[in-house]
Amino acid sequence: MSEALIVIDVQNDFCPGGALAVAGGDEIVPVVNRMIEAFDTVVLTQDWHPAGHSSFASTHPGRNPFETIEMPYGPQTLWPDHCVQGTPGALFHRDLVWNRGQIVIRKGFRAAIDSYSAFRENDHETPTGLAGYLRERGIARLTLAGLATDYCVAFSALDARTEGFDVTVRLDACRAIDLGGSLATMLERMREAGVTLA
Ligand code: VGL
Ligand code: ZN
Image (cartoon, rainbow, N blue to C red; front, top):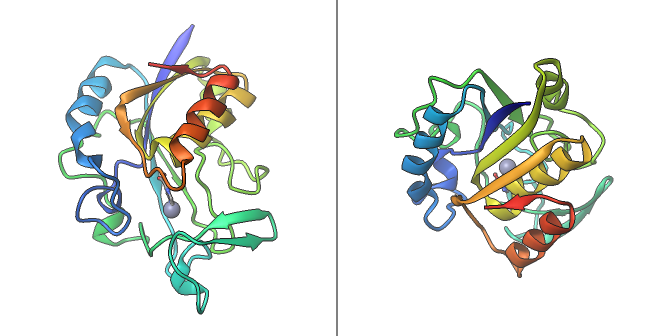
């Protein structure tokens, strides 16, 4: 049974000094680099928003980052502007050794819809194509690492389970945003979905 490493959003804006910095986000880079070396199949994701993206608080007059609004597809947390296409904040962390990555899945590129998951956008419908890519390559087992544990990593892990993959999240190679208890909530949801938390 073939396996793949999925490296989620190890980008400057999610590291200290970035627009949506995750505490200790840069600490995972050496750990992730060792994992990249150890896997034959390596996939990376890149949060990749157009300027004025609907998940940015700045797009909604009178709204502040970390508030929640109702979107046509359900509740959406508002974020500071981050990972804008072509900006330094959207680049992978400079110490991430990503040469061995075989495909980069960009997500969140539609202005009207956010995408935490590497598999489905936040309407839980629109696919990114990653499940088909992995299945066509005969991959059944996934190991996830990256940022942030309770958003993009967790939603990717849950969707991967729904798509029928065997999923392990390497918590030592992840860091969380932890907004209003989101880390505990998402760890429990992952456990219930049969994700192995390592
Ligand atoms: C993420 C919030 C907004 C993440 C991306 O990578 O976890 N979180 N966009
Ligand atoms: Zn984003």
